[in-house]
Length: 160
Length: 252
Image 1 (cartoon, chains in turn red, yellow):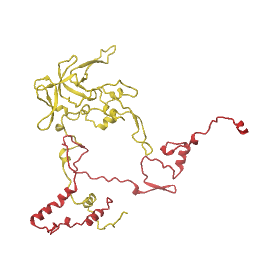
Image 2 (cartoon, each protein chain N blue to C red; image 1 turned 90 degrees about the vertical axis):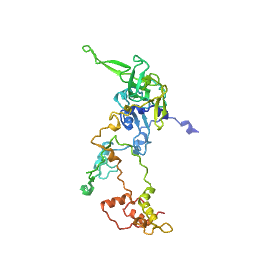
Image 3 (cartoon, chains in turn green, yellow; image 1 turned 45 degrees about the vertical axis):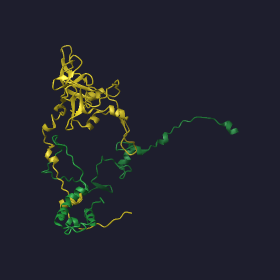
Image 4 (cartoon, rainbow over the protein chains, first blue to last red; image 1 turned 180 degrees about the horizontal axis):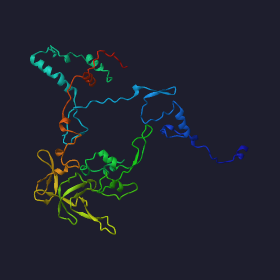
């Protein structure tokens, strides 16, 4: 009971700043000019800084090896521009142009272009088997599903 | 943003048609963003504080004068605009003025301000403004048209007898929508200058500029359907041969 009697209620003033000045730095983008002088000096002298030096999207054309810069010619960007001589399209479209309405090019349309004429001709000349397969198949008709799949993958494409 | 706010603060189609400016430009020129969330995954996108209510007047929404009229902390009294089901007054229409000192005169619609149901009639319902007067100089008078309400202050003119008439939208036998005079039953044709913009009188008479692709080149179909993917086409074009067959892969 005696300890209760000695209890003195006081209000303290905290002299440290909120959370000891720690901030959620994920919220702040620290570009080169931001931060204290010490921080910027550390960034300058550190060969591999924790926060990478912001170069406005510019990529280095080399790397640092033991403090020395090594230039790599392969890292120099090369712009490959197509030759546009004889190319008729220009930046803008004339107001005179009528609206172009095109339907979607479907698998059926491709079939009509590639297979349909041959089938119609075979039917006319009676060059079809009883089950509808051609007697003299063209190169496209000989193509199996497996072959077509492999041909598309031989390009190195990763669409499949 | 509230849907009603969005609907009522929009610039009308017919008031921006003549300028031939893209909607994206008009939006950019009008908007007054006071605060916007920075870009980044930690911020909620689309959180924006901006001016929502605009005061529409005779100034065009993309002009500096409009910006000045709607500058921050400048607020106007709410204006009640009668909703119109379908806009029926076009540039080049012959109308008769029903009010003011030019009452009974006919003129041509020069400009449309759809946000306020207004039209400007060329040379009618004008005001004179004295500009640049000081002690030595008397100033110059500049004449400018005052807007007229399409709901009550102007009336369309029947082209057959040049008298005012009511009208309604009807279909022709070919399925075209036209304005028809209710008094005489004659079609009130849409004037060709309704199509006019600052860049051309009509689309068909537009003079092509050096950087314009001509219609024939735009509409030319150069696509030939083949039994090949895009990559196979490219390899054919560039003469790349490939015999190796990639190994099979499986997904589990």
